[in-house]
Image (cartoon, rainbow, N blue to C red):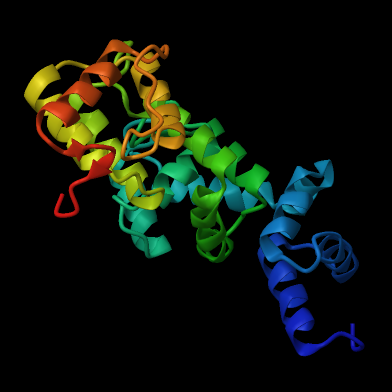
Length: 256
C-alpha cells in the first residue's frame, strides 16, 4: 500500500475502518469501483462474505441497549436514543433510509430481526460504524432507482397497522420530507390541493403514480397528456393548477 498516493491510502483506511475488511479486500473493491467509496461499499456488501466480518454479539448488545424494557422491540423512545447517539435528528429523512435497509414494517419500531439483520447486511456492528455510514446512506437518496425504492417503501412503513391507505396528514408530511431531498417544484401546491379538495386517505396507487407524474411531467405541464392513464386525483390536481392560475400558458408563475 506504500506505493499508493495519500488520497488512495486514506480511502483504504476509511474503507477498512467502516467495513472491518482487510487491506487486500479493501484494495480489490476500491480498484473495482475506480476508487469511489460509495461504489466500493455497494460491491463489498453485495458479496456473501461481508457478513463474516460482523460480530453478532456486538449487534445483540446494540439491540439490547435500545430495546424497550416492556417489549422485545425497539420502540419510539429507543429510536430517539439511537438517533441521539448517531447525532441525527429523529425527523431526518436518513432515518427513513435506515428503516428501508432494515426492511422495517412500521414507523418508529424495529423488531430484533429487522434491527440485527439490517445492521448485519450493512456491515455495521458498532455505533462508530453506524455514524460513519450515515453520509453514504443519505447519498442513496440521490440515486434515482434507490429513491424510487425508498419512496415506495415509505407508503407501507408510514401507514397505520391494518390500514390499506395512508392518512392524509401523514402522506403530506412524507411527501414534503421526500421531495425536499429530490425536489419537485409542485409539491407544496399538491399538498394544498389535497387539503382543499380531497381531505381523504391516500391509496397506494395514487402514492406510486405521483412519483411517476413528478418525474415524467414537466412542472409547467407542457407535456401533460390529459388522455393519459393518471389516477383521477392527479387529473383533478392539473385542473386545480390551471383554475387557480398557477400554470399559465405552459409556465409557472415565478412568484409561486
